[in-house]
Image (cartoon, rainbow, N blue to C red; front, side, top):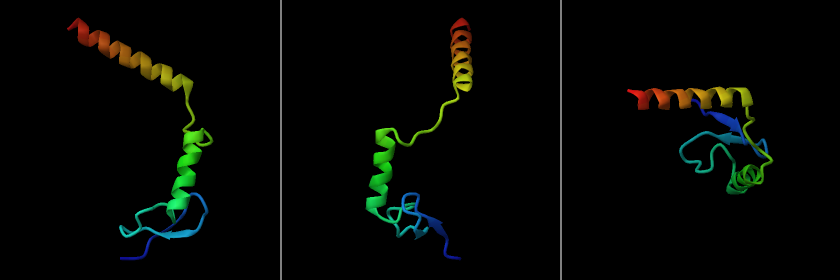
Length: 70
């Protein structure tokens, strides 16, 4: 099997994607902790789509109402 390499999301070093690498996709514990800190501080996040969120909430509410009505 070919050696699969990816870039560390934090420092961009090449990282071997193997089960031996306990930090994958990161190159080290340091890079993993830096990334965790970025998420915890709010510097990294998954953007929201307010229109989609509202539509999903409406669908959930309708499903609950339909279930209670049966």
